[in-house]
Amino acid sequence: MDITPLNKWIPNLKKPLVIAGPCSAETREQCLSIAKEIVKNEDVRIFRAGIWKPRTRPGSFEGVGEEGLSWLDDVKKETGLLTSCEVATAKHAELALKSGIDILWIGARTSANPFAVQEIADFLKGTKVPVLIKNPINADLALWIGAIERIASAGITKLGAIHRGFSTHETTMYRNRPLWRIPIELKSRLPGLPVICDPSHIAGKRDLIQKVSQKAMDVDFDGLMIETHCNPDEAWSDAKQQVTPESLKEILGSISVRTEYSHDRNFGQELDDLRDKIDRIDNDLLESLQERMKIVDSIGKAKIKSNITALQIHRMDELMNKRMQIAEALGLNPQYIKEIYDVIHDHSVKKQTEMMNETKTNKED
Figure 1 (cartoon, rainbow, N blue to C red):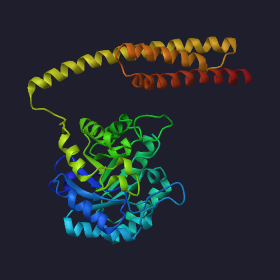
Figure 2: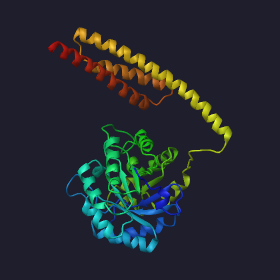
Figure 3: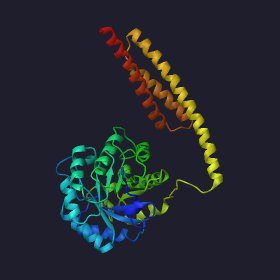
Figure 4: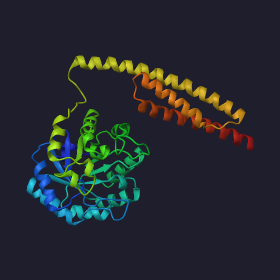
């Protein structure tokens, strides 16, 4: 995949790239007042505002529509900031480009729809507009990569991804769970792809935005998209997750930006030694998992012999509770351990189910 480095399409870029502005464009005056405040912060390079807002229920505020595009043009003329907005259809993309929008992004609901992404990609063929693709609502890395590949296949090389968290049935402190392993895996599979974090949508409330932003820098993300409003409590959409320009400045000033490499030879040796220890522990873990799966196989055979189901909910709940208690006693995050054992249990049940289906097929034959 041909990807243009971020510093080639954002001149004089300093890390992190900061995109800021309101969740929704409400009025021309609102857009200009916010832009004039955030441009005072030299870290902010791009002004964002929602023009079309995808909403599930009819009657909800769905954005001001095409009229708002001229307001973003006024922002660019009066502040020099680049402008960006979300597009959900090829028509949106056409209107945005005609109005001089500098950067488009594809939202979480749209990136989950291959037909919609392909229509946008088909329209964008022959253009050089930068496009950012948000992760789908569900935790599906393949779907996210697919959306990126569709836009890339249109000849767009100024590409980036936006991590905005994932919707789950679990109640957590976040609006959308970060599930950091997924964007990290994306970076691994698509080296060179800029990844920007949207802490506003992950957090869902403004007091968590700094924490999420710092985490994004700790895992070497390239930028941040932070929803900013001069009067957040009166915002027409997502009021709780927007910050004031003053708060934005404080958040950005508090973030420590990490580097991937160090020129300190002593540090390099120390890191290599620690990584060797991790490698040895990982080898032990893999051997233990291999032994565990052998036992799972034996349990499966015993269940088949006694005509017992592969999935035993009470046993699984009991085991999980015990593991969580042990984790807490050891000072480990119980949620971290739960996620690990959820995967282990899923594969164990899958293995035993396959054994049972194979036995049934052999009997029928």
